[in-house]
Image (cartoon, rainbow, N blue to C red; front, side, top):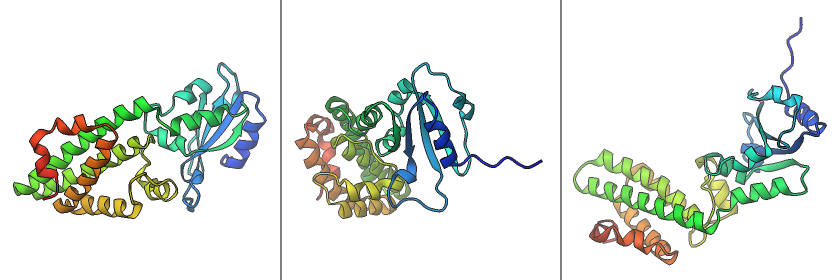
Length: 245
């Protein structure tokens, strides 16, 4: 008895395209990011079904192999995916393989890629406060001789900083794997990509206080222009410790 051959991406696309219950096919991950595919890259595919549709393709629910990962869900579930959640960036940069709804699938992805103004403002305020918190702890720990804690807090601060900067631009933050890819194609306003990435790496690795302070000076200026002065002012005199000397 011969072993069954693994389901390939091309074979599944052929099956799905022939099924009227399928209204969309969306490819995410490295294969949706030009130049990021390697020999280890699989195909991560969302299979979007018409709401209340019945199809035999549901037998592939949870299918996961080194070549092909499938997520099968209804149109309503697809609208909600990553809103909020870690999948938002993946879907924001996903590639449409099939859209039977005259652009509806494309619009859903566009909505995931762009936060509305209110959502972005609220998120930026929260990430700014988290960034200042970790930055303050890092500089204070360095001052008090807690070198390891200072470096760990510095690394935490960079995570919050990146969330903040992308929220200020009304975008979900990319995964670290795609950070350089994203910034090379879609730079953040007011930031030099090379300088930002170099500073982020240096701070994460060393916790260098002078670099953290210089970075904060730029962040403070950008955040205040974006209307987040109240978040910063709530820190009162503690800001003196994290501003450049």
